[in-house]
Image (cartoon, rainbow, N blue to C red; front, side, top):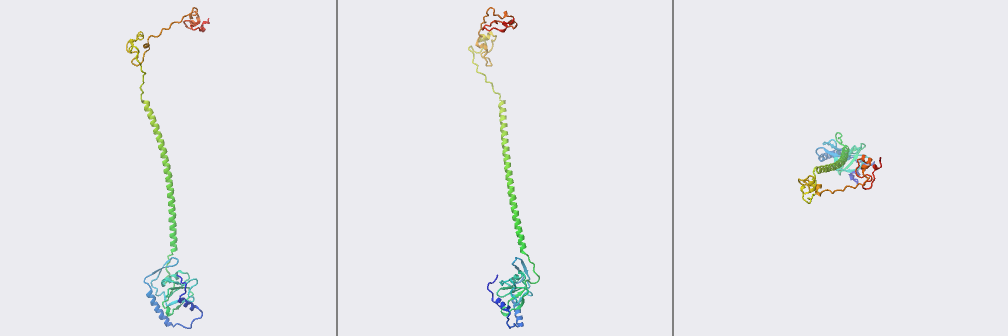
Length: 316
């Protein structure tokens, strides 16, 4: 994270970068002694084992556990003290400052100051010994040993996004497919229901017609008894012998009025009335006219008793 206010260390470095330099020269032996003290301090602060750091791009790198030959104790890089486009940040450890340098393109060195300040420099900067006040300053390259492999999490993120999109698309396809299948099943069920309804109605109609035919056949097969008219016994009873007309007709035995079939014979009504023969006027006999004789007509012809003159009367 960037510090909005420059520290005393940075002010010191800016003063150092000015053209006018102090004539004071720090003794080489004192510098070496301070370097040894700083190296011991760094060794105490160093944490055992490999340290994993994550860059701004999300890549995860493994720093070498042995940094004794990598870090430069009581040393800082200046002239210039910061590479173009970079700012001073405050980091929690030397390793974090080194990781920041590794993540920034063009960074060749880092300087980690006792107050947590982290400055990045490019290849144009040179190493300088730190004064006793800043003997705990540590500098170094962007990585120690061989360049660590970077597991680019961007690729992982893209893959994850692709998997998510693929899963979402598959889910959408499955949902659409399920909906289409449900619609097909609903339509199929509706058609089947309609077919079943029509089939049931037709079957009911057939059954009803068949039942009607069966009923009609059963009714037709039933023999309806003949209802005979009620025959009232004659005035003399039912026996034939009681009726003179029946006896005269030669029927004397059994029942006649009515008989055993409940039918009253005609003789039960007595003798038929005698119809008087019509009178034939003289000269009107059919026998007097040959044509009427040929026609086998008897009685009165010319004219008849009712006054009608037949055609045979005028024939010769």
